[in-house]
Image (tube, rainbow, N blue to C red):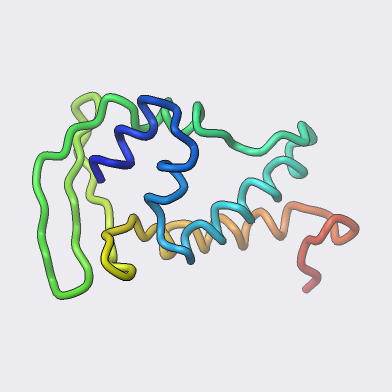
Length: 119
């Protein structure tokens, strides 16, 4: 988690992306692709937008359970728990359960001519 926060602060895109599980990155890529189309900007989210949400965060606690963990982070007085999962020999942020609903909503918002899902 600290590597993720440090990557945001330094705008290190490679370290930022390496902080996520492969499944999370697949969903992030899909959200970026769909949101760029859905709001007609053609521009996906970037590291600076993530920084607006998480920069300045501090790790304040953690819980370990086998190959998964929860890390508590405080950002501007608000504490949030982040799920992590061991992937190989590294711990990575696992936002899959948080991001899957967003992907489904964006697919509904994007016309089928640009890859949206048809009912």
